[in-house]
Length: 325
Ligand SMILES: [Ca+2]
Ligand SMILES: [Ca+2]
Image: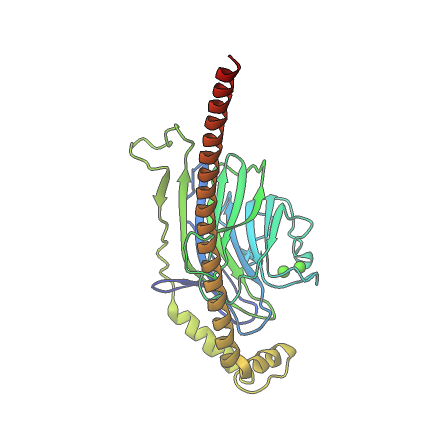
């Protein structure tokens, strides 16, 4: 049910029990690769669902129960799991799950026993889009995240690393998302794939002049339908006239309605906190840089002084030698 628009693709709208996915049209033959994905997960609730997944799989995924895509995939899924199914208070979180086509995803436990690596990050409702950089190089899969606190595109933090990971040599990249009883908007702003080549090795493409990162910007033409969204929303509203506006009858609707009352104020406060944190973050970075410079200066000074002392020591020893004669 992915819905494309000019600058982003809405994988799911914030309606209950939605699924959507988008896949590359052609198989990637890159031995080593990197993907950079920019997305937003937004919802009115303090808790959202279900989450978003980035895939590299042998076949294009069909619709299914694993964050909108099919189970028993062959390849790897990087899951941005919003909802804490097992109640261990470790969501939203990011987990990496590999599959040889036989494993059934353990949704009820947030895949905790199947995770090859994970990190706990709250990627929902951030002032800037969340950026993820996933690198697969010489059997090592690395996940870096810019958590959407800063607009700095290169401000990545380490999230997870899986070594000795064997992935299909060819496959499709994809992104999928799903909502559950609670519902977030899952919007993808960009999805870029790069080929990585070993230093000194030719890229396996006949033409020369292949930069180390071969910019293969994949912008699928999503010719589907903005109108479908409106139609669906209208249908949903017709079928559930009580959800909008009034306090609802189900716990979920009530939760959303209750949140609505405070939305503007808390949103503004949140934004102010985010901006404050961002400034602090930048200040600390600046201080760090200055400290590094000072330490470097000090090192130079200390070594100059040490040199001088050594020289003088040598001179003194020489004088003493003369005196002794
Ligand atoms: Ca979950
Ligand atoms: Ca959990």
